[in-house]
Length: 431
Image (cartoon, rainbow, N blue to C red; front, side, top):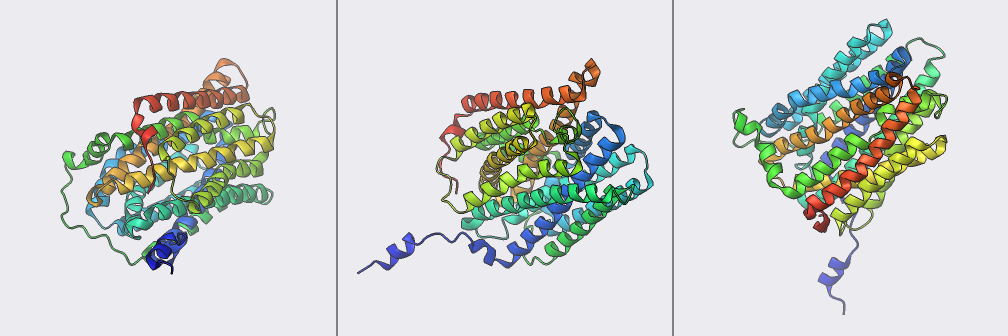
């Protein structure tokens, strides 16, 4: 006679249990729409800036402007996420981001100076800086602890699915609309406004509430709590450091408009740009689906190190490629292995952090990763300009040197982190 307890324990895990939670469904749907719109906007901004300036440095300044906003606002954003209603913070940030999109549409339509584009991007970056820690910490209140790793995996997958659809739609819309209008990017900015408002409605439908039991005044000690906690947790610090430098050095996305546009590189145009930007998140989606349907990683630390090393190798291959479809394949590989880093790091940070500190720790986490994204974009543009036009070389030459050297730097970072933080090599089951 079979043992009922044994039968229950041996039952296969329910990979979709998290979708039976109403609040999680609304939260995930809202993120899906918001990220689609944001990725469409990213393509449109890159296309418009390069079309108007023909300068890789102008693309690099996008990352610099957004990084400045993050550095200025991250600590207050984390404090607010721990001491005020997280849902209201998310809703307010979405309204501010929507206003920035309308501003971009007006600037594009009126062909206003490029400086105004950076002003709107700065405003949108402030909104995202307040949204990220509140949103990350808010997720923990929507699902039980035992389902949280699955929730992170599915949330990451939805984010990347949106990142696949957004660039492809944005690139295709610009390619079509430029035949009928002198302001194709303006229409994309309007669509981003609509998707942000859809997210606003979905988040507003969530019933879970973040209740602050003992709110703290905003002091220097309170603002620094996130830093103190992360630096006391060597495992988390090592993971964040690895991801931060890998993204800073190895990211080629800021220069995709150059690779897509230049004749001696890929010469793919606006639609090819959208496909290239969609390839990386498409790889992440495939990886997320794989992770969601298998047991939790048993050697998460080693998997993380190997995946970041592969990210560096694929980046080098992309920089040397002259065949569009091979370049897309390398972006796909970068996205697949990068998703492992996202799932391991985000799950570990949230589960190892007490709820009253999650907002501030999430803020510091987003500061490290977000600034490496934005500063990495500036670094890519600057290196491409330095080794390209500044030295009398072609723009394409500078872009190749920037991407390939970044991939090499990523591999060196993996080696250094593996030896300095042995805790990562020993990190076992992700749960």
